Image (cartoon, rainbow, N blue to C red; front, top):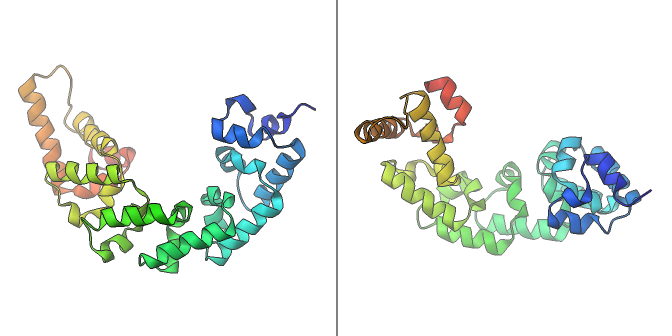
Length: 238
């Protein structure tokens, strides 16, 4: 059996179709290792789809996967939470504990850490750097209440603050709105323009400007729209 057959069978993808990082891990893995890792991941509650999205885990030793899962449980994560944040299974217990300790030093409780488990994949230096940037705009309590912001980059945060300020939205009252890229927020406003205000490229400049301002006013009055998905915006307001 040619090397890589197990990968094709399990995730229906050839080795050369995987991203370079994942490929570099799996191209040195024996098919037997891949199959055992797959069985262990299923045992840990991951679906086939989730395994395919985290294919690098197929190159891990099953015993190591179990140790990492046990470490995550020790930190308070449920089986479901572990399956949802499957990438963490690639982190060793020492790294997970170190990252958890860093989050606690920043004011997060154990419960908050488990609710934002993806942050366990961030190293202490990155967390500290992001925290210091956030403190320029938000209080300690606002940061711990919106802990997901610790996972965003400085550029995303600064861009969001600038965008919301220009929009006339008080970002202090909407920390969650700083957690997405500016492009994502623009797309949500664009949905309102198209679906609610019938914005069209054939309109003249004054008409386009007028509709754009209407959409901005609408968002200023209902800033929570920025937290909604595009489909929800269409269904609720268009």
